Length: 464
Image (tube, rainbow, N blue to C red):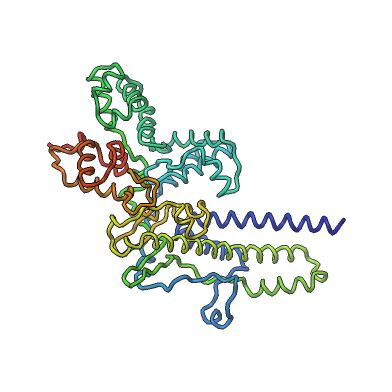
């Protein structure tokens, strides 16, 4: 009976440690290159059982499954990228908002939820993630279970912060939040109705529809639109894009395309890691002299530090291997683009395509590519740049002629750049030009991608 209880206790401890290791792995996946470098440095300072391997001793010691591994030789170009200066000490959008949250005297759980939401805002202050998924995201990434009602309270708190408009889920929501903080007036109320009830008509600047559907005069419609034009569509950018901030992007991956085969390098300054020989030997000896080791505190300290170091190294290995696996698959699928730098050679590619090649779970792939960048000879791009939805008549089919969103964006940008600014092209005209060029897409699709490119509608692009 006693032995059975011991086995159960051991199994529970192993299960708990495995769960903690999984959470650590997930957190590492979400880290950018600079964040991972800092995490390794912090862990080495906090855990005396973890140490860097000296180059000479590494060559003499032979292989070890507990060491981290290098995946590619660092070229001179990668050194150049790794030495890009970090942004200066100006507060980030996260710091700016977090400081305000600290002054709201929120309940502990609500504050936790609000800070998690702030961490999921993009540079413009927009919440790209569906709020309904945030509860599961927090539970999976941080191991914190909160009810949806608490997450909703956290989001409501974030939406009160300055600059007003942060925490919005789309452009209309962002502008509406800003209007809510203006003094009540007929002009403000009309603007809110336009955004909340007739946003599509507003985005197309069909003022005659606004007049008829809202049953207000043309003068009131014009006044409301003038007010909306004074609002900031990207409130978060006013913080992160302040003149005192350089906003330097540190690439997570470097791809050298100068040779016959692309060479992939993870852009980290992480030394080879191992468990300190002192702790490793102590853990081995402990099994032999368990009865003699009377000091339980010493035994607990050694075991905890040894296990933490081992789990950290393994999680780091898994993270780096996952990153290499995912990027290698992206390069394989998009090889024509990497060989030519031609955006029209991009193939339709989704997470499921990477999943097939790597065997990695979709959630792992998503975290490997979110908020991470790749450095190429022609520039630094988000890893998500290479993913695209298929549109048009071939949507959902494995067809090399299918269109990707990047190609549509490039064509819309080309057409708009070439237009006569005194007579800018409407979305309908852009659609006709693209269709004549062989791109079978709808006007609604053109409007969606134009908005994604932050290109104003024709009326607002007109130059007199």
